[in-house]
View 1 (cartoon, rainbow, N blue to C red):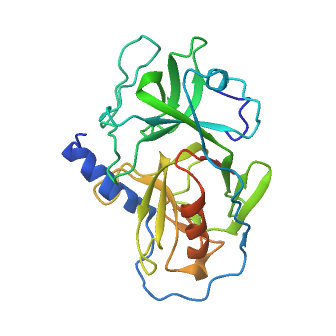
View 2: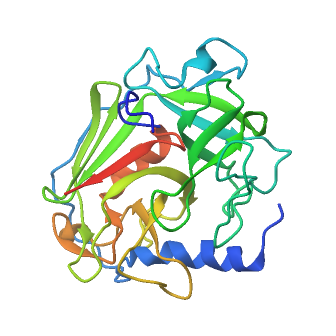
Length: 275
């Protein structure tokens, strides 16, 4: 993996539709519509100075993903429109990788499929990417021609001990907030993940106005609500629970903060969940 990269980097099958549509409910948000005043524990400093950069795969910059000049840079493989189902391999020029469901492009929620890059072959022909399937942290190789490579400087950390979420743009903190994390029976899993989809909701929904799904899954539940238990960062209709361990594994943050993140962090943003 790219340890030098600080912060890291269709046909829809009916089964995948069920998984994607229901899996996000694994967040287990309370459906009580009564909303108490939010706890004032949030700092937001929106940065607008770091645009996402798209790289030409044949350019010199694109051939140095294993040793980027910027220690905060994350590289993302944005799957091209012509690929409607991800072709992934266990090794470069190796056998096809097998997953429990197809990875489609666009995603079920209509977004372009984007994957965090973790390595690249010396000849630049193959990209290693993290795949949003179980077990958590699964990686596979894809052909470079199947993706357009972009980069950005955003990264996030969820600290379970502090029950807090911090987001950086390069070295600059842009968001710090208290969060709700998984309860003891359904803990939020540890690991390195990435934001892999954005789901629009509404302000009074149990998930707040937006859901940022992650590439990880609950390790305490096999299924939830008939689907795979996807982990996500989202808003809440129970702001009075901020700082507590009350969810089924997802990370709940104040609605005003998820609004900022939905408008700011790109798909492919790395998220480290630490104890």
